[in-house]
Length: 160
Image 1 (cartoon, rainbow, N blue to C red):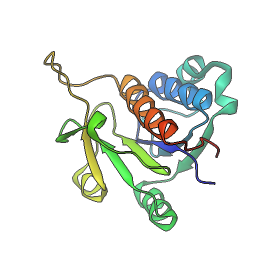
Image 2: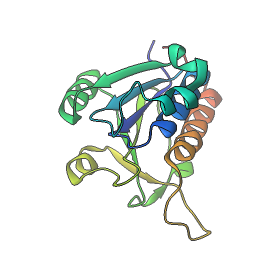
Image 3: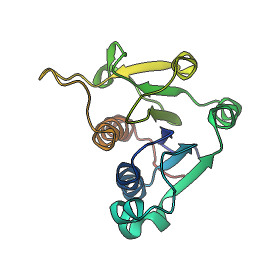
Image 4: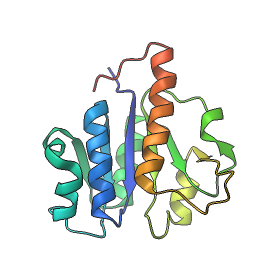
């Protein structure tokens, strides 16, 4: 059975954020795709500190680069849902499906145009308070919370 959703991180910059996201994914039984290169050594102390003892339980798949990730995603027939400040549709107005991959860009630069172009959908987290952007770990938590809420409402299992 296909899992509920996956989280994908495009060349993350900050070990602590990635550790926090891996911890969240382990707790929610979600897989994480890490598209390299990362801006830190994956054995980084901050990654271990943020992920605590959950890192061993996280279902992490590392991809050497964007092409390797994209080849696998396309072969599996999964939709790519990009969260971006350039999106027009609020994430709460979107209908998630089992198997979707929720993609989040680098903390410092987001994702390049070819990645934007490859996305099946581009979603926005509205910020009526006027902020420029949210912390990526916070964005991942909000997005996966909404996606898993929607899928649970239609009876989709979160099994891997």
